[in-house]
Length: 129
Image (cartoon, rainbow, N blue to C red; front, side, top):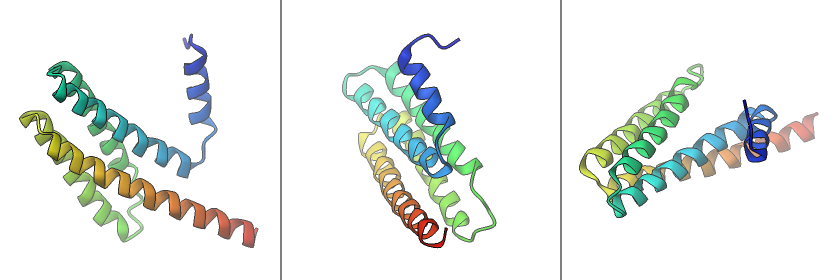
């Protein structure tokens, strides 16, 4: 049962979002959790670090699992997502901010690229619709 107004809003926004918006939410979530994990490293809160790296990795797994392999680019994305997951694993094991920050950089680049692609696709749909 959802009790807080924020949770109701969040669930509603997920249920009414386009596939492109959901993809951007996943990137945002992975980055947010990775930054929280880095905060755990900095504050020596190993539980916070471990839990949040786990959440970030779960999102990267979801990104991998939802790739449409009918597109050639999916192979490269799958490889990059695997590498990002590896970076999160290493960052967690070694308490390495540098590896976490590298992974965050890739995720932010992907988010920016997909946001641009979604804008272009939306523009084409308006022109051709």
